[in-house]
Amino acid sequence: MTPPRLPRRALLALGAGALAAPAVARAQTPPPAAPTPFEVRPLWPGAAPGGEAVTVQEQVVLRNPNGDPNDTAFVHVRDPWIMLRRPARPNGAAVLMIPGGGYQRVAVSKAGGDIDARLAEMGYTVFVMDYRLPGDGWAAGPAVALQDAQRAIRTVRSRAAELGFDPNRVAVAGFSAGGHVAGMLATRFAQDAYTPVDAIDRLPTRPDFAGLMFPVVTLTQPYAHGPSARALIGSDPTDAARDAWSIERHVPADMPPTFIASAADDRVVPVENSLMLWQALRAQNLASELHVFEKGGHGLTDPGQAGPPAWENLFDAFVQRVRSP
Image (cartoon, rainbow, N blue to C red; front, side, top):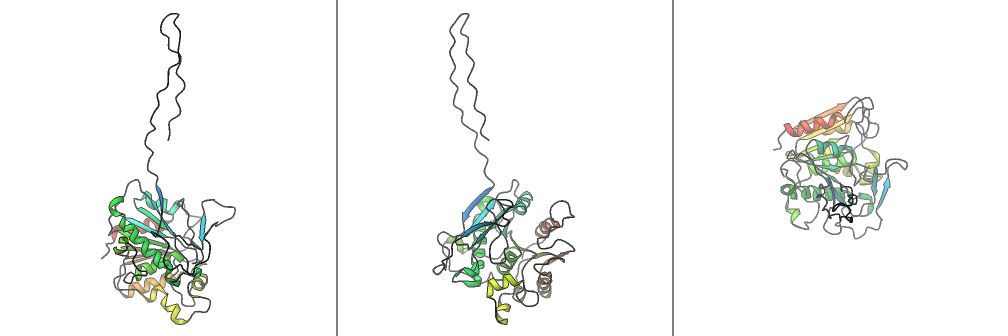
C-alpha cells in the first residue's frame, strides 16, 4: 500500500530571533507492490480455431441480477481465457478448474471465487478456464470445449518452471457440465482435438489427476442432464451420438486417477452419472475414489455444515496420496 503523504515540515529555528524557512520534503520512492494473486491471459495466441462461421457476440451477465457483481457467467464465448491464482506457499502441484453452465454459458468470474481461493490456500497453483460453447457455430461442434481444455492444460504445463510446480502433478477439476469437459480431457487425451498452433501444443494433454464434482457424465437415458445433452448433441440425437459423448463409454486403460464427488439429493444432475463413471473405472481396476454425500444438492453445499465443503480436503488428500502412472 502506498504510504501516506508526509506533512509539511515545521519551520526550522536557525537561532534566537532568526528567520524561519520551510523545509522541502524529500520525494520518497514507494515500496514495490506485492505481486497480484490474479492474472488473466487469452487462451489462444490469436483467434480461436474454427470460428469462420461464428456470428454471435460474447456477453458477460450476472448469474443473479441482484447478486454479487463478481458472480458472472460468460455467454457466446468467442475469446476464451485462463486465469491464474498464485498460492502463498506452493505445494508443487497445479489444478486446472473447469466451471459448469450446462454448455449454454460458463459460470466463471475473472475475479476468482471461493473454491480456487481455498485450493490456493492449500498450496495449489490454480488456473481457472473459460471455454467456447457448442451451439455457437464453431467448426469443431461438440468438441469445441475439449479444444479449449486441451489448450488450457498445455498452457498450464508450459508455465511449470516459471511458477514452481511439477508439470507431472497437474490435476483437472471439473464441475457439473465442466465435469463433462474435464471427463473428456481425462479420457480423450490420446487424440489432438485441434491442429497445433505453437510450441505450447507440443506438451501433453493428459491430466495427472481428474476431479469430477457433481459431473455430467452420461448422455444416455434416463440419467442424461437434458440441457447439457441438447446443447451438446441437439434436441433429437441418435443413440450413436449419445454413446459417442458419454464419458463412461470411453474410459481408456490409462485414464488418470479419478476422484468423484456428488450428492444423493442432486435434483439437477442425477447422482447416477457419478455411479456409472465409477463403475466403468472399477471395471478396469483404475485408481478412483467416489464420495456420495447424503445432502449437498447440485453444488455440494450443505447449509447445515460449517466450513468449506468436505470434498475439498478429500480431493486434496487423494491427489497427495495417489501417484499417477
